[in-house]
Length: 344
Length: 149
Image (cartoon, rainbow over all chains, first blue to last red; front, side, top):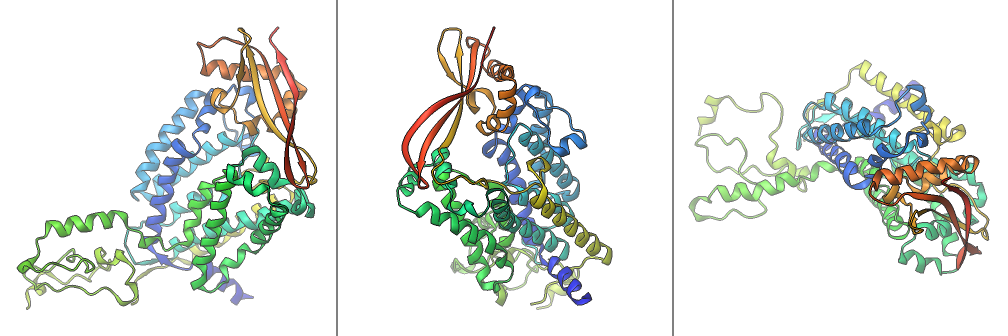
């Protein structure tokens, strides 16, 4: 029993590189800003909807949160926009992280308190709730972190719960008859695209799709037990499911898709680094007219003065990781003392 | 290649495991017994309702008539109220049609120069479905209406 518990606790806090936490953090806080202005701009309109139509959720009644007014809604909107963009930088991860989480949570309560609750962001809310606990993390840092590993793991669990428990809810509210009912036909009528209208004409296809959805949702936890080399393919399948729902019934689940990146080796995605590298190469003229091969790493960041043009070979286990090139090992003491560098 | 690692303290690990178990228990309880009201721990009931394969599908809209007699669509863009929010509170509107005045107020707030609304109604277009597939036939039903007196 003790063995199982400690195994579970080790799995929950399986370490990940800090660079992955940094990349996930940047993506999540960027999405908060994008959500405010692009994905769910309608939340802001609730400021001008008469308070009579506000039907606070349980949490809004317990706390108790005030009835939204234009001042409250606009105040949260601007504070959240500024703080989330500040949090994108990764600075003050605790203070900014908690502030963004609390404001975004209240923003969502305002969103859902007028008669319709959306179910597309449980994983995203979990990500916002745990990121402040993941500690400092710099982009490209390969130091492993258990706190960061836990933050990503519980986000993954929340994402999978969104699927698995949705199947459970279908069986609870719709019953087994859900699979042979007309739920997809209804969805297509209410918000279907032309593609969906075409699909709806195929006999039995919508019913088959309903069986498929339940099977996929019930089997989704397998993503945690499949061999690591298949895991990305399974996550790719999850994404493809959402591509189809966007293309047919225009439901994006955007925040869920962002939370699902917690499964991905995000530390390999370094857009800023990729942009900087050509600039740096451009700024450093090639010695002896020998052009530097495009795929070779750029000049190390802290070359020893007067040392020869020693190109650090990429680490064997990271050939596909552009991050390493600009990321000197963060360990204190790794850098030789100034005097030592002059030794030929 | 071995990388350095930040490890958790015993307490840090215990707090995280406890938090995970607590949140999971709340979510599980919400799925088993909860409702949307329990957000964010309510059941994931998107498209969870079941309809017999030949039940017509409702497509709800809100429309108003202004002082000039023109028909005005009262959608999310013109009132700030989403269609699903109208449907979610349809029982309240049906019990007290005068509540539709709030929808007219929301419209007036966003269109101060527009002629006032004298009538607001919730209309459902019922689309016919046979064997789980839409047939293309439909009919309109006004379920709630309010007239300024």
